[in-house]
Structure formats: C-alpha cells, structure tokens
Image (cartoon, rainbow, N blue to C red; front, side):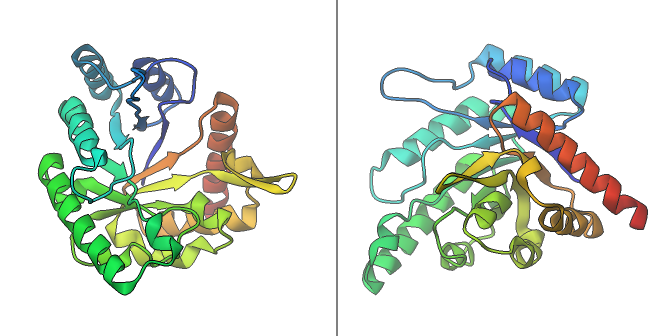
Length: 263
C-alpha cells in the first residue's frame, strides 16, 4: 500500500508542528514545501528542526519528501542550482524519500527553435546529473509534470536519465486530461503522486483544493489503479489548508472503502 502524506502547510505553524499534526492523523509522509526569499524570509530547516523531524520520523514511521523551491534551470550560473544545493544540504539528514522538482521550460513553450530546444535539453540533463550527485542518486529526483505544458514536454530529458517521476494528477485534471493512461504509463518510475482537487470559481479554474470537488468517477479509477498495482510510493494530498486536508483525507478513505471490498 502507498504511503499517504500531505504538505507542511496543512496548519498555520512550523515544519515540526505540521509533522506532528500529520502523524496524529495517521499519515506517513510530509512534503516539505520550502522557500528562501531574497528579502530574508525563509523556512529552511535548522539543525535543531531536522533533529526534531527525525525524532518524529522514528516515532511515527514518517518519511519526508522535499519540494525544491525554484524551477530547475540548467543555464550557466542560474540560482536554481545553488538554491537546490543549499536545500539538499539542509535536509540531507532527513534521508528524503524524494526531492520533487520542476523543470523550467517557460521559454520553450513560447515558440523556441529546434536548436534552442536541444540546448535546453542538454543543459537540463547536465543540471539533473549534478542534482543527482548531491541527492545521492537519480532515483531520489522526482521530476513533476506541470500544468499548461504538453504531456510529453519533459520526456526527451527524462528518457536520458534514470530519474524518478512525480505525477501530479491535479495538474492533469486542471488541463482537461484523463490522468489514468498517464499514471499507468509512468507508474513504474513514479516515486511520488500528488492528489488535489480542481473546481471552477467563476470563470477561473482553481487547483490545490479539496478532493471533495472531484467526482467519484474521476477519483476512484486512480485509486483503484494504485491499489491494483500495489503502488508503494508516496501519495501526497497537496493542499495547503486544514479544512481542505481533512475533507481530502475523508474523500480518499471513502474511495479506498469503495474499492478494497471488490478485491
């Protein structure tokens, strides 16, 4: 069975308090959503925080995934690599289940030439090679699919390296895709799955909200696949508010109750 987790922003408190809260709700992973801003604001864990998180991990069978704060850009001297190095150094003692990362391809979506695309792919591969050395292996890097990108956008890069995948099902719902074929195809390489609801707010679409907004006919096939395939990675309820977390957990438990009796 997969390890169910949620983010470090479920309650308005620090990393340790959120880890303690999730453990009390029988979750087994926490995604550390980290930031370190130029104006001095930062939630990067101190040595004392890491020690407290490790104590909670030992007491509650808790693991951690770490979401890198900047989209990875392989251009020379781009700050995303130095920031990733800093974050990995701060969190290495947590032995993270995975480092979740985005690939910065914004310029590639705006009509880049074939030469520019090849350059981007080459630079990105070099960047991932460096990240893998810092992370302790390619499998610790979980490259996430992003909303607004073609489904195969990152494929030419990850085909060249044995990195893992982070499949964000909510992003696929947001873009109007049926996520089931994508999840089926990528599951052998998938270390982390992000689940969150999508719903309309006026003329705008909203994501990272509760799974209660997801119809059963869309949620159940995903959970059924994970159960059928004995997926043992992390499933993160990627929401950032307590009410959304509680209702998402309830929706997921209800889905499992509908599915497990049929096995």
